[in-house]
Length: 354
Ligand code: EPU
Image (cartoon, rainbow, N blue to C red; front, side, top):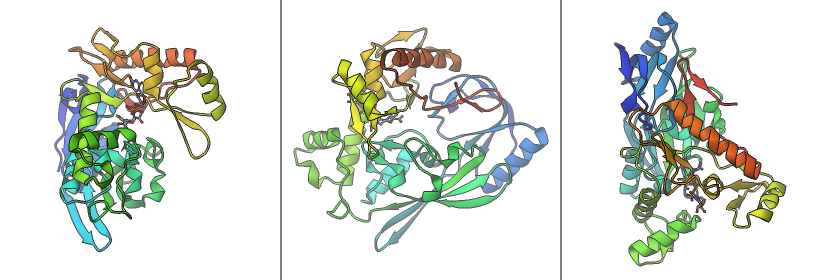
């Protein structure tokens, strides 16, 4: 049974630290609570918002409906001959899952160490870092449909996982309740190699261990990823932020070549389909935004892709105003549209900037 509280501040439930209120607020401890929450919203004729780690959302107004915080967090491990399977409830902290899998020597999630947020968010944005996306070891997802109250399973394929994208973005009434991952059984082997494609990982392992990166253990990769993230990305506990504020834009080969004529150092990765993914942080950096700060909102000193809210009473609109100035500047200079990565919410629900 849930007993929603009234007018609760969400400041500590979003990593930008934006101080808006939820008209109603409750913690979800099990699947039954989701059914109660759905009944509550129908009775009150109000909207709802499920917050995981709050590390990928921008709140611009008091929320007029029910805010739920996910607290279902059981982990269930099964060993198979060909690997280790873990079934994680969506409220489990992502990095606790990664740490537990690395401790068991299982491979697959180590490059995704220290990403803030909860397990339930992982399939929604297909979280990715250092050459690995969650798509690579996700097997299935349990879903609760908040519109109908139905529970069902989606295979990884049915999740339509793409770059920071999935079917969940097109079905916002689907709540992820459990995620199943298939991990490598043993430490890394020839058949199950370490994901060292991202050059900085190998360099960091070599400088941390004094050994060639090729034989690295999952723990050594995790340590290297943690080291890199801590040296580049602000810890939301100390500097409020939501990680990358923009997606890396994907543009045609023709446009990439055109930009390169004027900007030969452009950071661009060729994709299988011939297009290029550009480093948005690099584009923003060239325009001098890195380290910018005004009225408590700014751009991180070390990574131009991360907006930071250092002021005491920053609003979501202030953060979005800065994002829009950056988008306009990048568009005017490079003719490239930067898409906002976190999800935006006003009093009634999710919205998108045109
Ligand atoms: N760069 C700059 N200046 C900057 C930032 C970046 O010149 O201010 C250059 C870097 O030197 C590098 C390139 O841009 O050559 C790419 O930078 P980086 O390796 O830091 O990665 P990213 O593309 O900026 C993406 C993800 C991150 C993920 C890293 C590592 C997106 C939107 N972001 O960032 O994910 O940790 O790769 O794999 O895809 C997140 O989603 O919140 C996030 C942090």
